[in-house]
Length: 255
Image 1 (cartoon, helix red, strand yellow):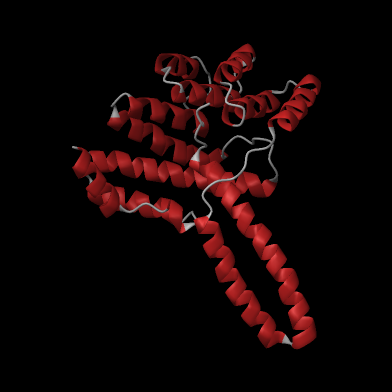
Image 2: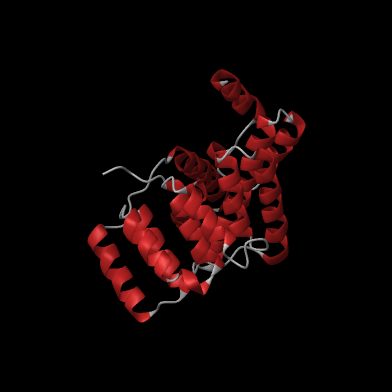
């Protein structure tokens, strides 16, 4: 079965939690060393350990998905007790990304589409877009009353415009998405505060990078460079950084 690629902001959060796990263990050992041997050896251990943890994080490329049987049991129990749009969105996302069941994910999202919940509709539109069903994704967004004020729905519209070659329209949607994200924030996805915060930073970084790609396509290198760095500065992991020269060279080779 073909692997469905996770969004970069999800991978980013997973890598950061891996880094936090390593630094937590490191802090415990460093505390023991400080207690037994003093501050200097403890701080030396912590410094070298922190560098090693960071290098381990940036080299980490993939994570094992949750076990299929356990995931199905947990999701089935949760969805039977709660049909809130947020729960449905999480259920469908797990069906799509972890269990690779696009038809079931789309079906359950469509069943609850009438709620007009921004997160649910954005999830549905993104899955349809990944499956190449662009017209259906566009129809979902056009029928939503929050389509011009919700950051996620605006970003999804930008993806559709970009995929259909309407670069200028895509830029307008991405910039509007960033502006509304600063004013009202992205919809809460049910995760804890830290995960939500990290996802928000990752999503903003991805929007800036996507904007940079659009401006690069228009040969506006200064603006593209500005957006690449705006995205980079929101990311702790340098493997997610994007540079104008690298992307410009790739674009020149493909044209």
